[in-house]
Image (cartoon, rainbow, N blue to C red):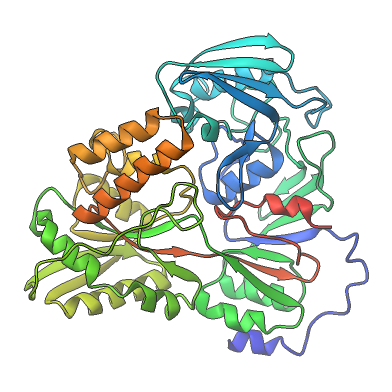
Length: 479
């Protein structure tokens, strides 16, 4: 607050070249790579989607797959999908998009030689028939309902798809932007022509690690956009700064409490239920998260295409639970504060909680090895409900996946298998509603809240609208 006040009276001179100056977006870290085959950190994933495009994109509200580089698709049967490409789409180099590019891209993501970190996305794809310049048919090895969402993966030019890693962003793309230059702390993007959509303004992605420094740049008029880059308690001061606006929308994410379910005291479902019901989610969302979150009653947020209503909590065993547990959390200051508040609430039902903050790598290592009792975690992009398979299916227990709670539940496995193999959206929604009821009844994951996607903008970037999953494609529509 003090830092913001210090610059309140010393904003720069009026912006006389605002229409021509690139928009400046502040990010907390440099992307590890701009090669979409290998990008996994949040900044890299979102930056590569500005340079590249897939056959589909996710609806910014419902997260349903929508045509992007594809013009249409048809399910021939549960294991066969025919795709038509849009006419007139060209890579940044001017090369036309063809079915061959799509086929080679899918093969590259699956290739051990390429070593893509996203090979799992295409593992269900078997044969690919090229039926014309703009038509191809994808044959699956098994029924795989998430194929359309999976086809959000960026399409590369056929002759580059199998190339060595290109972290400098030199791979030809179909996105609304083309890379102009990259240096440590700065990525300059220019509007591209011929791709799936057209951007109107050049953009500079500038890395500013400290949130106070980001706030000062926004307040001084030296930056235009920050997405999810500020602690909730800092947002009210930013919202009152001249020329700065704060816009939020419900996010497709989930903060949850993870319990080791297969052994120790938390193998008791009644104890897990008592913990789940002993937390005042709405109070935390309103206070510690400054109203920028929604208390979670289910795994999936409202507005998600697979979200379903949830009946009241099943009753838990009455009475106090006199025991001591350890809660792992990150070293982030806000997350530590929230963890200590959770400990305070659970003390009211007789559970003493020792909060242990850990660096992310150490935290994930302990969870993978099973060396924990409770932990707070977040799924930052809960777009396709089949991702829950990685966290709940018995076949995904580490090291095979991220089922760190060691959930072994026959009904959960059955529902996850059905959700993956059923194509009809209405049937899938019913399956995931049943899955959510089972998970909540057994308190296998304890949902806490869904945090908003929050954009802090200058007047020049006021048209930016955050999407439910936090992607940045709205940049291209800023006039």
